[in-house]
Length: 252
Image 1: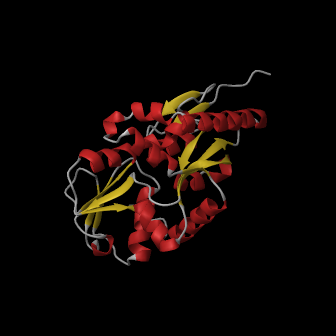
Image 2: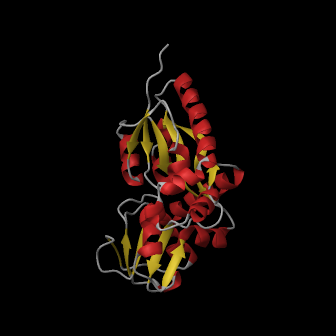
Image 3: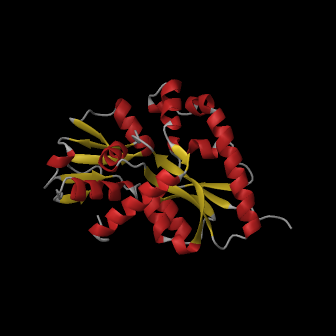
């Protein structure tokens, strides 16, 4: 039986590159995290690394894989550029990139439950604000080339310091409607692609010179992630979801 070519969402960030560097036999569709979740919900994709909150929202329609974007320590690309420390952001205006689904929820949890402060408003990243949350390559470029900020706060580090657990920003999943044979074939292809990607960090770094990092810095950044999710990552994800539930589901 001929297997269908799966439509796979690709987040065009450096931290996803090891999965996609040599992923073969699929049709890749470049989408930012928030839109990737929408595309999976609309059945416009068959698989992808879903933002954790989007994965949970669609969980009944998905088969999870043991891959994702786990962060044992600092994320280095989920950054709040702020005039004040986190604990001083009560009554602040916080700008948020439109690309995020999970990172803004992590920021909400940290502000409300760790520091017990509430911002006055959540606004777009280009509006006047006291702090702005950027993710992915945007965050790296701001860090290396953009205007400075009094405080550059790594949300992955904040989470680790508070809970002692890794944070999971994204989880790979395949739509449950995909036949089991095709799902297994894709999982094998993804595993092989990740292995090849981690062996090709100099090539990946060469393609991302625009970020302002050296090849060694790119390699260090990528080796920092847990791309295969283990028990600690599962605990971290569960703890975040528990805390998020305490805040309810009001929109930011």
